[in-house]
Amino acid sequence: MKKIAAIILAAAVWGANLSAQEDSSYSITMDFPYVTEYVFRGVGLAEDSIQPSIEYATGDFYAGVWSSNPVVGSIENEFDFYLGYGWALNDTWAVDAGGTYYYYPELPSGSSTFEPFVGVAGDFGGGFSGSGYFYHDLDLEASTFQFDLAYSVEMSDTSSLDIGGNFGFVSADGGGDYNYYGLTATLNYTLNDVAGSYLGIAYADNDIGAGTEDEFIYFIAGLSIGF
Image (cartoon, rainbow, N blue to C red; front, side, top):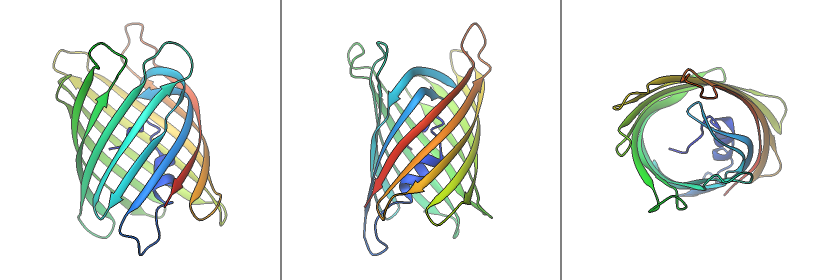
């Protein structure tokens, strides 16, 4: 599943909504966000970063590459390769399962980890949607439960406002368990039939303690293209 730290969010959903024509057998979505803070599961990993991604989907299968490229400091680049498959439970809810390969080419020996995931996602109606996911990193031996809730309201024929929140719990075999949560608000604007832009603000927090930075307020801006 696409890493949306929290980026969680509406930006990714917005990009997916720009996909191909109804009679197409596949879709390709490209996303080009800039974030003032890269926060993953409540932990700040880098400051100003460009995080481009591309995803291919056909039927219930999808695969993509997500990346984070910090533009300040000496923080390593990250590339996440993921794929998944969904099974419809009904008209609005589906089970989603897959895996993500996290790759850091600039770390010694090209450090990497692999994390399978499974979850349920769908619409509650009235503009509300939600999801619950379980992740388990096989290399770090860490498990994560994350729950997301989002609300989308149409502002005009070409714009919408998405508000989202998430709560998660990380449990590692070696200790260091913690909780995290976040809130986002994103304004989306349709540019044409295949492109859209978005601008958002996000808040993230964790209860790790021990001198670890635990509160973040950051901004998101980007462009999505789908065909």
